[in-house]
Image (cartoon, rainbow, N blue to C red; front, side, top):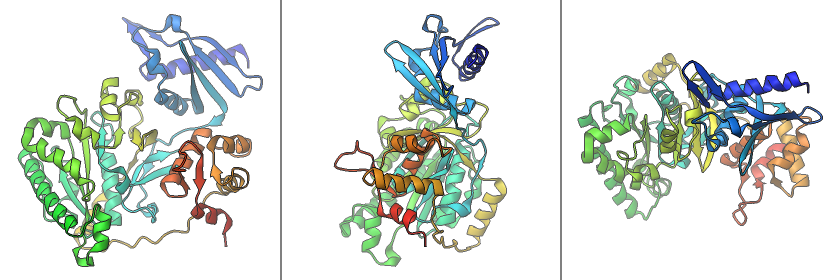
Length: 458
C-alpha cells in the first residue's frame, strides 16, 4: 500500500472519529484523533492504525476509544470491519479491507414476514443479515432511552404493530400511557385495551397503574389456585375460556411521570415490575434519561432488555445500557440503536411502519376483523449457510464454532466475522443452536431442527 493510501485512510478514520465526538475545539481550531503509526499487511488485507497518545485531544479518553461501540460505528462508516486492539497503554484500530460491512439505514417493517415459530415476536432491529426478532416472553421488561426525535416512539410503534398483527385480545392486552398525547392515539378504541383508555394525564396514569395493580393481585390468586408459576403454565391448567392474555404496558416519558406522580405512581410501578413478569405483564418504559435520583434502582434492575438511541452524554448511556456507547450513535442516522439483550450489546437499525399502514391495522382491529392465522413458512436458510452447518457437523463434532467456520469459508462467502457471529446468536434465539449447559464456554451445539433443515431438503 502506498503512503498516499495510508494517509488517506488515516484522514478518513480521523474524520469519522471527529464526527463521533472524539475532538477538542479551541476557538475556530478543531483537534481530532491522530495516528503515530500506520501500516498495512503484505497483501494489503489489514490496515493497522495506532492512536497517537502523545497528541490525544483534550477531553478524549483512551477508555472511550476502546469501547466496542466505537469499532462498530467505524465499521458502519468505513464500510469495512474494524476491530480494536488494546494494550496497557495504547489503542490500535485494525481495519479488514476485504470485509465489507454496513448496516441498512432504512428498514420498513414487513408484517407479513414475522417468524411464525416465535410467539409474541417483536423486531429488535436490523443487522446486515436482516431483521432480528425476539420473543417478548424472553425480553421481560424493556427500558428505552434516547433524546427527542431519536426513534423511541417509532420503535415502540413497530413493536405494537407486530404484536397486534399476531395476537387478538384473547392473547394480548394493552395498557398505554401517552403523556405527549400524539404518539399512540391510534391505539384508542382497540379491543386489546380491555375497556381502558389511553392515559394522557398524570392523574390518568396513576389510575391506570392502580388498575394494573388490582389485576396483578387478582392474577396472583388465580395462579396460586392451580399451583402455576408462569402465565404459560396457568393457561395450560385451566379451561380455554379461563385463559388470560399477556398484558403489555407502554409508559412513555416514564421519568417525568415518576417526578410528577411521586409515590402514587412510583410505588405501584415498582411492585408491578417486581412481580409482573411471572404473572404475564411486560412493561415498556420509554424516557429521555432515567435519572439515578428519580428512577429507583429497582426499576432498572427489572428491565433486563435495554434499548438506547442517541443520547447526549456517556453518563446518559450508562444510565440506560449500563455501559457507554449510545452517545457515539451518529445523529444523521435516525433509528440507529444499541440493544442490550441477554448480556450482549448489539448495534442495530430500528424498523419503522408508515402512518397509513398502522392506521389501517388499527381500523381493522376496531371493526373486529380476525387476526390472520400465521402459517409457518417453509423455513430455509441460504445455501452458503447450509454448507457451513454441514461442515461444522462433520468437522466440529456437531458444534458451531464461529471463528473456525469463518476462517474456513471467508475466501468463498462474502460474510464478515461479525455478521456470522450475529447470525449464530440469531439462530440460538430461534432454537437452532443451543448452549452447552455443562460447559457454556464451548461452542454452541447444532440442534436437530437445524440439522433437518440442511439435510432433509425434500
